[in-house]
Image 1: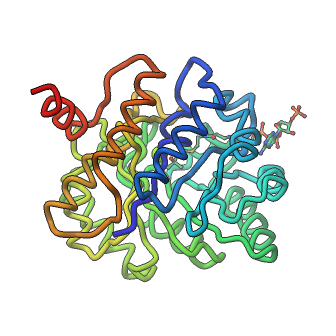
Image 2 (image 1 turned 180 degrees about the vertical axis):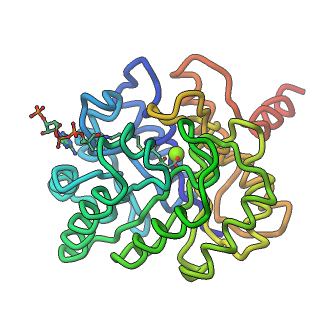
Length: 296
Ligand code: HMG
Ligand code: MG
């Protein structure tokens, strides 16, 4: 199973207090040390929109890169891509929404305009030999519009695949989805985009993320996004809590006999350290259970 660790980006982008570059770098290096092979390290977005990510250039300058690990960054436009190129980033992630209102709130343009913009970003990135991943937000609901139609999800997912994204991650941005709906959505998208090219990205606001992942595995999904310690939330999705915790996903997959290459103890240690920096407890049940075992 492929795990895409999004903690350093999706996890930290919503933190109100500035997290120091050293702590971000340490988090990424700890995750890699634990066996994580795909890390979204930050974003090159407008610092006026997401101040916490303003130092992503410094993060990339300082992080010690290990061969065979993908250190990616989120980019919204050609300006962000140019920054990524300057930082020697080899993989970028672009993002669009299945909800018209969320698109305007998050990136200040319509879905159609965003897809046109991302087509240019993807083409330029691929010309430079970079890999491009695509996100579809609000696949199971929108904080502004409520229900989102499957047709809207299919349209954006297909557009991202067609423009050259090697993987399309289906984002339940506000964590409202339930397993039946998640599986129906994943199966429907898999009819348009090969399932090997799909990933799932569940926030855990309503406590459904692990169940949704299990339902997605039944639909043939083999790539999962998660955040260590369950960090996260989107600054433009009010009430959205963190991503599903990587520790919880790894514990579940270990139990199912599915290989991730990640050492749960080391992963939990990475989570403990960043939560110590943030000054609050982990949102990962598995990490809390491991810590309790150690105290015995
Ligand atoms: P805009 O204001 O429409 O942009 O924002 P603009 O092109 O008119 O530029 C305005 C200013 O921003 C200019 O500077 C640009 O240079 C600057 P000024 O002349 O005012 O000084 N600018 C930039 N600066 C740095 N990096 C850039 C960049 N682009 C423009 N890349 C924009 C449009 C897209 C830039 C803005 O809305 C934005 O940055 N939005 C990002 C919001 C964001 O990061 N949201 C969170 C990530 S999405 C997410 O979390 C969901 C996901 O996890 C999946 C899921 O959960 O479903 C992926
Ligand atoms: Mg997200």
